[in-house]
Amino acid sequence: MALKKLPNGEMREAPVEQVAIGDLVLVRPGDRVSVDGIVRAGQSGVDQAPITGESVPVDKKPGDEVFAGTINTTGALEVEVTRLAADNTLSRMVRLVQQAQSRQSPVQRFIDRFARVYTPAVTAVAALVAIVPPLLFGQPFWGEHGWLMRALQMLVIACPCALVISIPVSLVSAMTNAASHGVLIKGGRYLEALSRVKVFAFDKTGTLTEGRPVVTDVVEVCTCGECPEDCGLQHAAALEAQSSHPLAQALLAEAQARGVVVPSAQDVTILGGRGVEGTVNGARVTVASHAHFDEYVPHQPSVCRLADELAAQGKTVIMVRHDPSASLRAGCVCALFGVADTPRPSSRQAIADLKARGMYTVMLTGDNPTVAAEIGSQVGIDEVRAGLLPEEKVAAVAALAEKGRGDPGGRPLVVMVGDGVNDAPALAQADVGIAMGGAGSAQAMETADVILMGDDLSQLPFVVWLSRKTTRIVTANIGFALAVKAAIFVLAAVGLATLWMAIAADVGASVAVILNGMRLRRMDGTRISR
Image 1: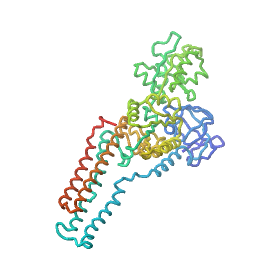
Image 2 (image 1 turned 135 degrees about the vertical axis):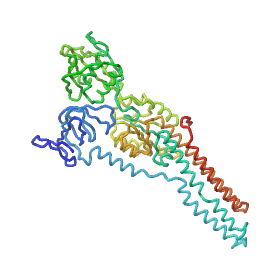
Image 3 (image 1 turned 90 degrees about the horizontal axis):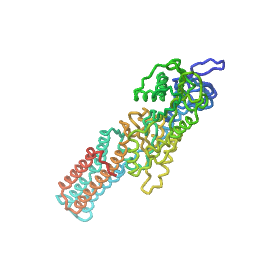
Image 4 (image 1 turned 90 degrees about the vertical axis):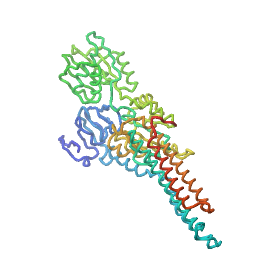
């Protein structure tokens, strides 16, 4: 539903399908934006993580674009509709998932193709062996050394049991091993595909990072001589205790971690999506962005430089003014905070391990380039592509796949790792989509082919190693089974084999490949070799 503004100024709820281009829609604080459009009135912070993956809400003012599916956090916005419901960002994401999944053809296993030719061919050869020598050359048909017995020996040894069973036993054993490590693989074909992967594409927020902002820098800059230690954090936490904004929660968490006593605040008001203002212990306190301070609160050039330095590191800057005299005078800024979404502890090592195994790593994110570049540098990503909408992530994954088509060993496959609704189309487009199970959205987990149930990126190198090991064991099993069958087949053709020898070879080969495949269940993922 959308709160549509009528020509007479009255507001009325209407199904989003009935909203036309050019209509005005009111989005209240806490509401989910129901349309794609342009802000015409109001200021607020909008949580765009479901669409772009940005880790902190983005300030919106008249003239800025908003997307359907995002969440308005602080102030009311009046939005002019620019796309119909069927064409908005959320609807396009659904179509992208459907189109990408329809283009993804199943991996045809070698043994399936082989068996279609192998079984009829062996049957035909055995029939010829039984019939042709007796008819054309007067050879014996019956008896222990007759050509019928040789044909039966050939049919027994040619039974594709060992070939057919070698693959599912190996795949099930490997997938069971992966599940015991918290990795759910939705089918053997995805395990097989991972053995040919050469490119890993990652979402940023919630995948490479924790997905929640934390305070990384606390800079005390007060020169009034009246502020005790942690005064800025104390006053900021007092105001933010009345807010559910992610940045507010980060400041509160930092105050709790430092053991700061948080006083109560009065007369708290929202500053148009840029911050909050209120009274704490009789003093007027402002907690807001650097942009708000530049516009409304005079502050020293040295403080401005510090804020710019934090921003250059990809951090969101929050400034605090504590003014006992209630006058806006220069030098009343008492603290600056740098807030950022931090990398997961496992991210850097996981990226390094993947690169050590010949992987090329790419970050695909909707976040701004400065933040993306900083996180990419911290975790060691090879390439960073920022500011991407969901359809642009799909195009990037397709381009990465196309780039590798000239590989002489066959096209290297592309993996996409993500966690959000905005990642679902790219997960579907990739040869193998991997979703974060704990932090991931239901849409991402439904679309993905592999799920990391513990959100542990360190399992990615293990899964790649396991898939390659599985491929080698499957190949060895097939080669062994074919070699045994070929040897007994030749012996049977020249009359040197017996029926019991053929049976023993067939059963023995089946048991051997089963036992070899079952080794995958017990292999220790902590001892990974390239």
